[in-house]
Length: 78
Image (cartoon, rainbow, N blue to C red; front, top):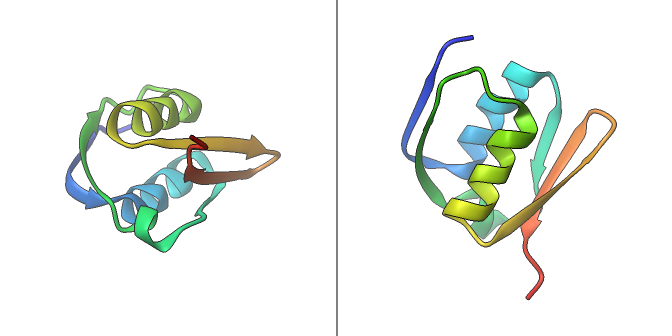
C-alpha cells in the first residue's frame, strides 16, 4: 500500500480514499462533519480501524461504528 498525506483535506474526501483502499462503504452522518478539514498522514500499513481511531479521536470530536462492510462516522455524543 502507498502512503497518504492529507493536508487540509475534507473528511468526506478522506473517507472516499479509505473506502476505496479498504473496500468498505464509509458514510458521514453530518454535512458539517463531512466538510471538516483534516491534516494527517498514514503509511498505508495501518488497519482501517486504526486510521479511524486516529481521525476520530485526535482530529475531531467524532466516533465511528463498523457493521459488516459499512462504516458510519458521526459526531461523538457529549
